[in-house]
Length: 457
Image 1 (cartoon, rainbow, N blue to C red):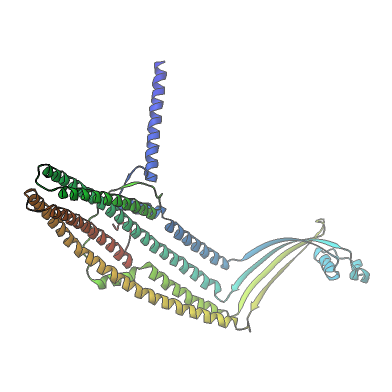
Image 2 (image 1 turned 135 degrees about the horizontal axis):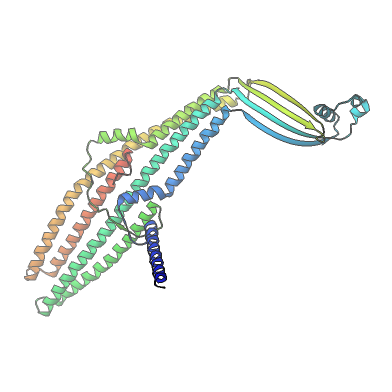
């Protein structure tokens, strides 16, 4: 009996442990229990779950399938068909008997030839066709399909970079919202301490009631700011979840601090040359230009002759008791003499498409230069703001300490104290925005340069 109870107890404990592990795994996957989350982990989750990634990878798979479709043009085509017909048409009735190989001398009777009896025919046909020379259409089409697949792969790379930067920006926005909330809470605690001091001084008759009222109004203002800051945290968290492609109401504990992780960017020319060399979308449109040029070759090749092999094997029978079979082999040489200027128009259309893609490539190249230049100067200015903002925080903190001491000694008014509080809060917020601005600016600079990968943080 004791042994049985021990076994039951062990089973119960094991079940509890398994259930606990399952709950932990579920929480880690859904983010519903404040799962710790670094920026690198957020990027990995986003690359695995973001719908834009899924959509573009589906396009890449489709373009790969089109390569196989185009390659099939080099192989022979084999078709099998089964048909049935019943006819009293004199010509078809006589021909059907010939195909079935059941013609007799009686079938040449003029009366039967002119008014034959109805005849049934079951026909099974195997046909084969294969191009020997199709004016290079298959070769050009295969090269185009391969280039198109490569272009879609480059598009996927660009979407991947955009998703990574979007996650970095969203994560930084969420960090900024959390830090702003902490600043408000910290300021609120400081204001409450000051209120306690003012209330004590008021009871001792050292300050007037207006000082106490001003301090209480300041607490109310900060409570409102705290509520607004909390709503900004909720919004930023939702945007981060959307960027990662997880449920909007998922909850994470952000682990990566909002701090400077890179140096000031230098040499604008280097960044611009890097962007022109690495941008996947620029490479993609240059491939599209090559595809358009090959389309011109394909359109011009339509003026050349084409040579095709044909073959078929046919079995005919009226009731499957007797069958007749035959085969046909041949070749077709096709050369167009006039098509209503259709081929000439296709050549002109293809050449116009080449000019269009060349213009688009030029426009994109100019846009990349402007985008890189803008991101570069924004990153530089954001970097300079960090040093100024940090110094301002130190100055505001020291200023508040001096004002508090002088207020306690009756040398300053409550207005001076509250102003010093506001100055410190603004300085801290400005410092956080400077760190956030530099983080975002550097991410966008790397995006402009096409140098974004999973290690960018």
